[in-house]
Length: 250
Image (tube, rainbow, N blue to C red):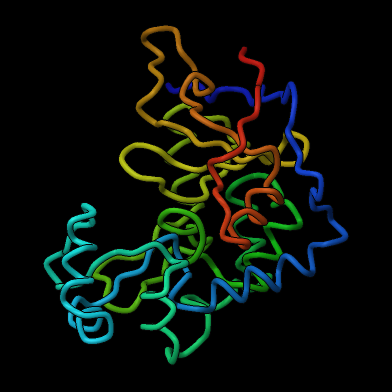
């Protein structure tokens, strides 16, 4: 039987910016999140732009120069570009605004909390109920709290934070770590539901092995001091991986 690891994440120090955000500014944060999340261009860290559109508006030489920079084309004849670029802004300028998935309902929040076994931080609850039930954010974007979300053109359902939480718990992760988003390969974002300020952890799921006497904390590759800071960094087009946070290991 798999034993769930305790949540012993104890911040040793934090690096806050001079203008560190507080709960009093959460209304502003929600508005900023909504503005970015509801715009299909910057909804994620990168956006797909058709090669034909870039060539039409910027010229073939410009497109060739972009390709020489090592940015690959995909089979759909589009190119993935950073969200805050002229090409992305131009291509999505007239696209309809709105959430990829509608906000979660109070009943859906309560159902998720029952399964998780803990209440969500108030800020995260507001994000899901006022911005959208996932489908935006750092890397591949926030997972949904429900298991029936499917983005247009996708053949599978969007990742579900509750299902991923249960999978992680069976694998030995602390029950108080909630999955937020996939960060590529075996790396995932999790938020601590118990530690002060709800630090956000960048965890390498393959970076620890119980057989070697290691625990989940050995898989942490980076941490952000608080969920609030992580969300502010993304809302303002910052680097969510820029802030390191020391932590105590068991």
